[in-house]
Amino acid sequence: MEWEVPWRRTVVAVGLVLASAGTSCSVVDRPDATDWDTRADQALTDASSEVATSRLALDTAARERTWSSYAVVVLAQAEEAMATVEDDLARLQVPTGRSERAEEVLAVLESAASAVSDARASAVEGELDDDATLGALDEVAAELDRATDGG
Amino acid sequence: MKRYFAVLLGVLTAIGGFVDIGDLVTNAQVGARFGWSLVWVVVVGVVGICVFAEMSGRIAAVSHRATFDLVRERLGPRMGFLNLVGSMLVTFLTFIAEIGGVALALQLVSSVHHVLLVPFVAAAVWIVLWRARFSSIENVLGLLGLSLIGFAVALWQLGPDWGDLVAQLSPAEKPGAESWLTYAYFGVALFGAAMTPYEVFFFSSGGVEERWTHKDIGVMRANVFIGFPLGGLLSIAIAGCAAVVFLPQGITVETLGQVGLPVGVALGKIGLAVVVLGFFAATFGAACETGLSVGYSLAQYAGFQWGKYVRVRDAAAFHVVLLVATVLAAGVLLTGVDPIMVTEISVVFSAIALPLTYFPILVVANDPDYVGEHRNGRLANVLGVAYLVIIVLASLAAIPLLVITSMGQG
Image (cartoon, rainbow over all chains, first blue to last red; front, top):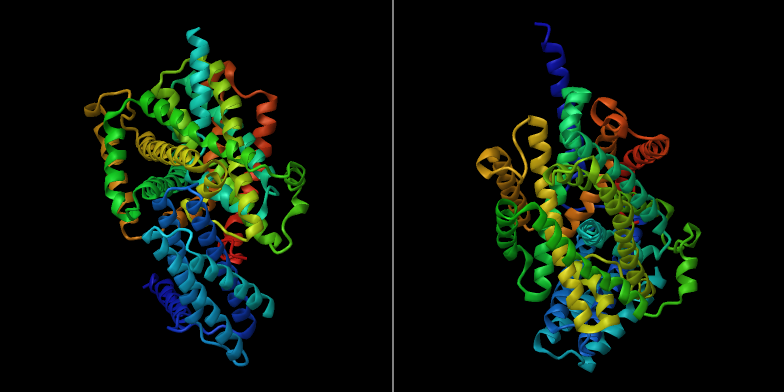
């Protein structure tokens, strides 16, 4: 039958597309060294943004420029975004020669996630100008800067 | 006196209704990353929407038919269907983003997670679409949307170095850390946000709803040529606030709460409350406009009775479309998808669909069978054709830029 030839071609084409898609959709993402460096730098930049957002949200709420529930929402969203940043990088297979850098970057991201999480908890408790929380955010912001420069 | 009041009301609602979730998010994102170096795109986009809104308003006023009512008749069912699919899908995506935006705005005052608010917001939008008068939707929400003027006041109160801010207007002042590809991606997104197709769907169908005649062309032009540019200034003020507060601190904008923070810094709680009211009004108003636009476009293509100026029972299919669209939009948001991500996607896809929306308007606006002596003059055609070229370029560039920059990540 005449229609069989294009039908078979379609099956083969779809099969090839699915096969090639399958090979690129493995459980663990395995970037090369350059790609990993780019993603690590992006993660550090994103983390710096979330830490700075948290600092600003706490600061404006402490000066009574925003109401506390507004600050809590902003901080909760920063906490969620920070967790995503950390998870996304941790899920990557570290390429050869990047183990030490990966350890350093993941450690600072963990500190950042923890500082943002503590900031959210402080805001929920109504402790908007807690020196320890603000100090931790400033410290981790400096660590993130150093880690970025170290890349 | 009544005429002056109509002009004033039209201009004010055009200003208040100009900004939607796409403008709020995209302008704040762009300001935080590129300062004012992409303001020229907002200017180009606002002039473009003025050009095509004026054409579609004139068509509605003279022919008493909405532009897309005429597309199928003038350009045939195939072009009509292409126009329907492209434009309506983007409008529906924007509808989802707007309902999500209302929920995000309410989250900022209630601390209740936006997903839990979505069913209530969707129900409220549907009730308004079903029961409220067209003029009430347009006027009340448009006037409340004027609260976003808080961004302009906040920018002034932040006391920026105006010389520095004005110097940023040059594309050459793009921050060095950002690539030109990312710059181009956000340029296309900003253009898509400014020229989003539903604005023309709504404007032209609204003209029919309000029974414009050729006598209303002057008022319509005042709304477009005064109201839209002033609305565009609000977009620039949003970008300015983000440029002053976020850019020096390296903060990128990913949430609606961040968009309002500079206003809190500058004006305190009252200013912030006014702007959050503006978030609500702008997104709720745009949710109504996009919801109606989905119904308008489908009804106008299929040829069934539409509009809020006829009784519900006479436009039953139109109201069923509104209900189904609202339920579907709520369903998408209840999956937990981030409304800001939907917004980011909708503005880029809006840029992709622009030629499908604006080419037919240019054709119909030149057809004396529909607009008689009110057909396009030389200036309208020169601007229309020039914008079609820009629109096609933006549309072609959108997908490659989206892929290459990973949605603007770099």
